[in-house]
Image (cartoon, rainbow, N blue to C red; front, side, top):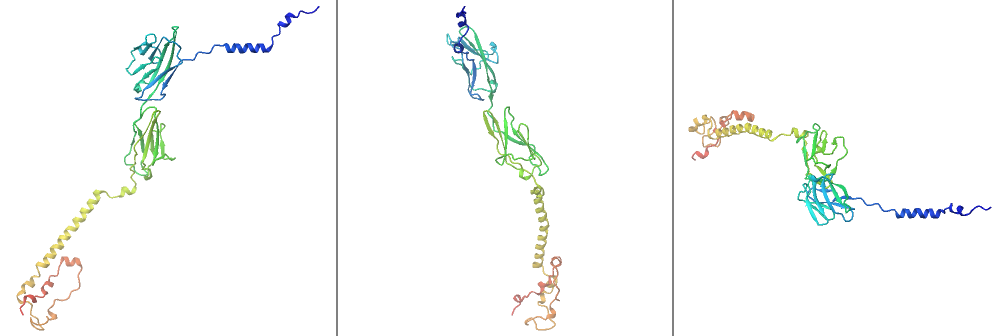
Length: 339
């Protein structure tokens, strides 16, 4: 008796058919719906600029949109809502007058400030009356002003004082960099930076540390540099230098010494010239004096014995104190005597 063949043929299914069935099931799987997302344009917002909160992957034919401040759809934080059927926009309690809601769900915020930093939530009402929400975040960065370098010591002394330079003013989310003589900071044990690099410490300054120093402040939307700052380091030569007051005192002292000497010399000159020896004046009637030898007034010379005795030269200071006025007595008066 032969075994039935029918059931046996049904128990064996070819592998090719199984693979074809699996591939068909994979192909027929419905695609996953894209999720609603929010994009901030530009991603880095500077204070005073305009920012868009763009909605992506919005469901087809929505009934309306609503934007709220914060991470929840709280009606007390409603900025604005839009209805598609009648193209109507309604402003909420959080509306500031700078927001615009477009029909595609995008929200524009003009002239943003740092107070606008925070989360924003979009609520989409679909045509089946279901709602979908997604939050986006906005961070507004300030435009940095030019920083100013300040010092804890305006006149540090060489090898004695330590100087602390600060780059200000301090702002959040800001990084700092330093330059000396238009170059980045060299590696030195005497140069120390704070953890945020806003403060530079110069330990035991030398005359080579005068600078100039420049600091730079940087945040995600702006970069700003300070004016050059130069240290006025006092070293040993400066400490020994004479000040203006000392020099003036020395000049006055010299003048006080020289002025009396000049006056004394002037009066001595006048005394010699206008007031000769009184003995001379007494004998003026018998000029020239009688000579014990030689010829008379018409003679060619006066006796050597009538001349004053020769004296050795005296020091100049003795001449000033005790002038010899006899010399004026022996000046020739031939011009006053007749022939």
